[in-house]
Image (cartoon, rainbow, N blue to C red; front, side, top):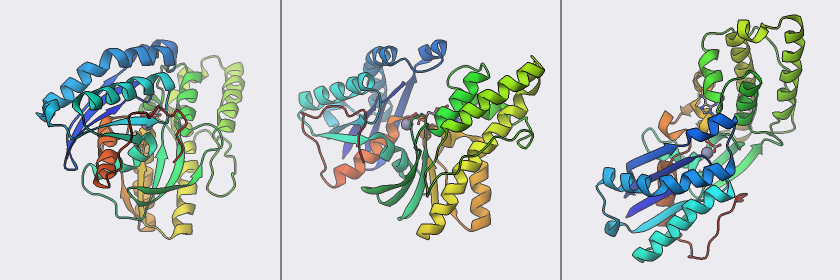
Length: 332
Ligand code: KG4
Ligand code: ZN
C-alpha cells in the first residue's frame, strides 16, 4: 500500500510517502513569515500553504522514488487546526485522489502526533500513555490501540506550548519562543525563581494562571531593576521551563499510577524540549517506566506522522468520501 500524506493544519506545509508502513520521505516547509508578527497569522498561513503545497508534494514523491500513478491512497489532516490552512491540504488531497481515482484517508492531527511513535523503533506496546504537548493541546492520552485512544486529562485553558511561547513573548524573544526558552534554559539555574503552580482536579491541567503571574513577576522586578531580564535571562528561562515540566510530569505520574501503565510516551512540538526529554527519562528510571521519546523531526508538525496514522486506517479500510470538509475543532 503506497500512501501520500499531506499536513497543513497550522504553519508547516508537509508531505510524506509511506509504503507498507515504512516511511519513505517526509518533507517539511516551515513558514518564516509569522516571526515578524509574533505568532501565526491565519490568513498568511493559508496563502503560504498554497505556495508550498505543490513543491512539497513533488519533493516527497521524488525522494520516495514514487510516481503519482503508483499511489494507492491520499491522506490529509482533517483537523484540528486553522480552517484556512486545513482547507489547502484537504482540497489538494481531494483533487489528487479524485484525479487518480484512488481513496482518501482523513487523519486526526493529534492522534497522528501519538502514532508518530510507530515510524521508527523502539515502538511502545499497547496500552500506553502519551503526553501530547503542542502549541494548541496538552493532553494525557490512553492509547489502547492505533485506532482506540481516549483523552484522560487535558488543559482547561492554554496549552503548554502557548505558555512557552507567551513567556518568550514577554521576554521579547521572537516566535516561536519555545525552542529559545529551551536554549537559554540550558545555561540557567532552574531553582532561582519560583512560579506558582495551580492545583487542578484529576488529570487536568491549567496554564493560563502561570502566564499572568509571570507578567506580574516581570513588572515587579523591572520596577526595581530595568535591566532585570537582560541580566537574568538564562535563570528566568530555566526556572519557567522547570515549573512547566514539573506541572506536566506530576499529572503524568498520577495517570500512570491510576492506570497501572509503565509504557510512557511523549509527542507534539513541546516534546522537542530538551529539559522535558531529560526529566521524563529520569522519572522513567526512578519509576521503572519504559519511556518513548520521538526523534526531533517527528515532534513538531510533519506529514510523516499523518502517513503513519493513515497506514493504520488503510489496514482497516477506513477511507472517507469526497464530500469531507476540514474540522478546525475535530473531536476524537
Ligand atoms: O506540534 P507543533 O509543531 O504544532 C502544533 O500542533 O501546535 O507544536 C508547536 C509548539 C510551539 O508552541 C513551540 O514553541 C513548541 O511546540 N516547541 C517547543 C520546543 N520546540 C517546539 N517548546 C519548548 N521547547 C522546545 N524545544
Ligand atoms: Zn501539532
